[in-house]
Image 1 (cartoon, rainbow, N blue to C red):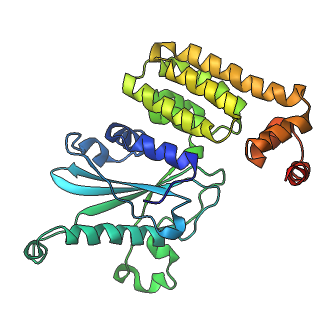
Image 2: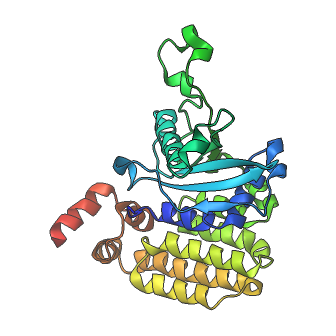
Image 3: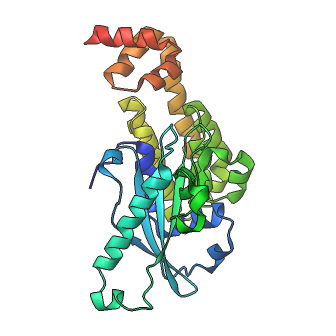
Length: 308
């Protein structure tokens, strides 16, 4: 299976691989009547990916089989966690959906598929997007086809559900008081200082999380911080997370905030250039070094070239 390089992709995939949290996503962000009719005792995650090789480093997916009114339905969730909008999204989703139907037909007896009353399961495509730019890709397949207005009902067509993380306001996410709402709120942060400020706001909600949800939340935090902090700070945050229980959420967040504050302070006290050198040696991203030191990108790159 291709490796998922983006920590957000790994974080969301790990989170939504939980059947409970996937249902929480549907119930929190999809306002449609059928959501309440899902049989919570008949949900199965299909451990297969349908991502095209060209996109394996940019996105991830999850496939769930559910029952609604005793009918089997497949949900295909594409994690589109990159900064740019893919205008060919309807086409890519069609390819992925065709792959699912092909597997369905491969795994049933030929005589069953040949029956007149045989029906393929419906597939509900969902795109989870967390880019800063507004999602402007077509939502209907027919809208990417030339001359579609001439042929209308004779063309293949479907719509996908879009869950756009950055379009939800803080109040809405806070009022959910659940794990998905907390993660979406944090994911809207521009930097670690804002991340910590938002964690303080949701600490009362975190303290009421079930043990397993709290563990999933801590794992999410570990993944997000894993590639964007100096090694020493990262180790300290992991220690804080590992030792914290739900009722200690406020203390946990306060201690993490102190660690992050020290990272920023080091960027000021040790001199911006020296701090940039240390961060480059740790292979931190240019974006993070710019945020911490305030140095222009050209100077960061000059320092980087002098180190090699």
